[in-house]
Image (tube, rainbow, N blue to C red; front, top):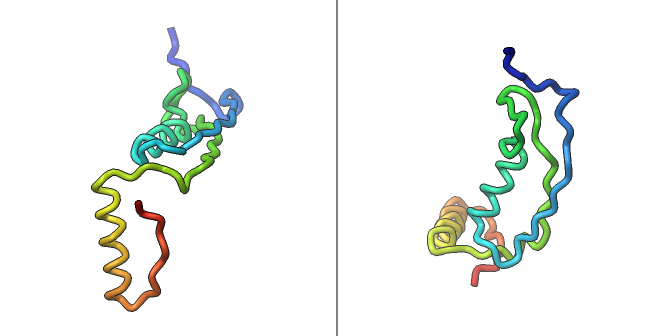
Length: 92
């Protein structure tokens, strides 16, 4: 019995729409990466593009946990020290 290896022709791409409103940032990122790589398919092959297309809506309303908020504030502080203009963020 031979091992199945996906080809570029056999990989059909689908579109996925993810609503990020109220979801945790890391969970949305993990799901998106899995869909883009194609790891959710049975024909997954690491060196063939078997991934799907992903559209994320309501990304501005994603929920941040404590670590993400601290890292965003630390990035803003580093930018300020470097003399870069601050980028406004909606941190609640």
